[in-house]
Amino acid sequence: MTIYEQLDSWIDAHFDEQVRFLQALIRVPTDTPPGNNAPHAERAAELLQGFGLDADKYPVPEAEVRAAGLQSITNLLVRRRYGPGPTILLNAHGDVVPPGEGWSKNPYGGEIEDGKIYGRAAAVSKCDFSTYAFALRALEAVARPNTGSIELLFTYDEEFGGMVGPAWLLAHGIIKPDLVIAAGFSYQIVTAHNGCLQLEVTVHGQMAHAAIPDSGVDALQAAVQILTALYAQNPLYKKLCSAVPGITHPYLNVGLIEGGTNTNVVPGRVTFKLDRRMIPEEDPVQVEASLRQLIGAAAAPCAGITVDVKRILLAKALQPLAGNQPLVAALQKHGSAVFGEPIPAIGTPLYTDVRLFCEAGIPGVIYGAGPRTVLESHAKRADERLALEDLRRATKVIARSLKDLLV
Image (tube, rainbow, N blue to C red; front, side, top):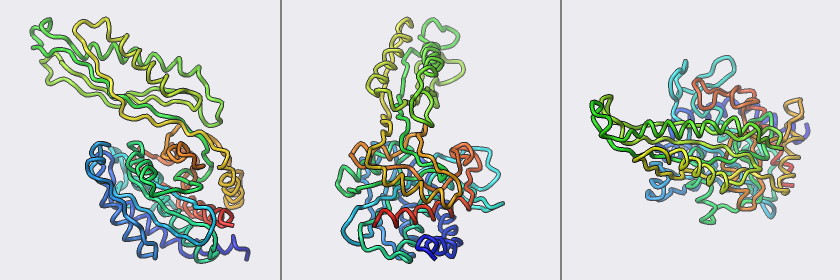
C-alpha cells in the first residue's frame, strides 16, 4: 500500500474509537453564553491523555474572561515536535450556542442514527477535536514524521470573537505557527470570509404610568424608528456584491431586544443588539461610522430620547495570504482523492477565528469534518448532526495533507 493508503487504513481501524471520543466531547455542555467552558477543557485533556497526547492547559485569568462576557476559559495546546521545519497548527473550538427548542434528540447525547451523530457541536466544531486528534495519531503511527511540528489547539470563545482564545495565546507568545488549519466543512476549503460588527444600542426615554403617557418618553417608539431605519439598509446592501466566490453581499440582523418593566408602564429603556456582516471589500471603520450616524439621525426627531451605542465585537474579514497555497494544494489534492470530487477553495459568509492568525501574518485556511453547507449541518439549530462518513473522510484528508506538508 502507499503511505496514503496506510493512513486511510489506520483511520478505518480506529474509527469506532474516534466516534466514541466525539460522543464523549458532545456529552459535556459548553453553552456560550454563559460560557463556563473550563470543565470541558479538563475532560478533553483527560481523553487526549488517554491517547498519549499530553495537552498543556492555559487558563485565562478570571477578570479577562469576565470582561469578554464569559465565565471560565481554559485553552488546550498539544505540541508534537518531530524536527526542524514548519509548525502546523490545527484549531477547533468547543464553545457553542445553547441548544434552543425543537430537538428530537438529546442535544448532549451524541446519539447515532442512520449513519449520523446528533448533538450540539457535532458539526461545529467538537467534531474537529476528533478529526485533528485522530489525523495526528494516524500520522505518527504510520508516517512517523521526523521534520516539522504539529500543534493541536482547542479553544472555547469563538462565538464571542476569539479574544480570550487564539488572540490571547498569540498576544502572549504561546503560539507562533507557520500555517493554520481551522475547523470547517469537508466539501470546500475556505480561504476568505465575511467580517462582523456587533453593536449594542440602548435607547433611553422616561418611564411613566400608561394612564398618563404624556408624562413619559416612550423609548420603544424611538427604538422602532431606529430599527426601521436600520432594516431599510438591507435592500441597499444587496446591491453591494463581493467579488469573492461564496460570499454575496452585506446584511444586518437584530438578534436580541429587551426593555420595559410592565404592560401598564411606558418603557423608559429599550436595548437591542445588531449584527452587521461585512464583505471583504468593506472598510470596518467606515461601516461602524455609517451605522452610528444612521442611528443618531433616526433618533434625532424623537424629543427627550438619548441613545448609547456600544461596540460588542469587531471581527475583520478573512483576507487570504499568499502563503496559504501549500495548505490549499494539499487539501485539494487529497480531498479530491478521498471524496471523489473536486474540492473548491471559496469564501464563506461566516466569520471565524482564522482571521486572527491572518491578521498576525500567519497563513490559514478553514477545513474539517462537515457537510456541504451550514444549513445541512443544522448548526445553531435543533438536531445538529454530522454524517460519520464525512468525519472519517475528512480525517483521512487531514492526515494525508499533514504528511505532505511536513516533508
